[in-house]
Image (tube, rainbow, N blue to C red; front, side, top):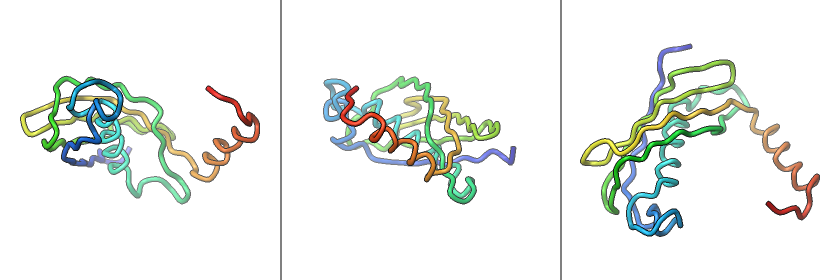
Length: 134
């Protein structure tokens, strides 16, 4: 594997990112689903330009421990480091902090795929299972 790649994303927590607004809880603090999205964004940034022509990466697993609440208006920073590359499988260690310290850690897996083929397979579900509901 090439040298460890890492990247960070930083956002200010908004009302739209809260557990109350996202439906994942009743409080106006950073929602775990919003945090997960920020963590995935950091992982994507860490491998930007890495996949070959027509390739992208898709998330397949996220083991997230969200240990501290962050209020609206506070900045959150997620840093993802690629720690393993096995064939098409990418494994990241991700940390998240707000202005007062660490708020979460995660291990995240992504796979390299060919975007066109991946979308074609997903869209086939509409044809093979029309009108089906979950």
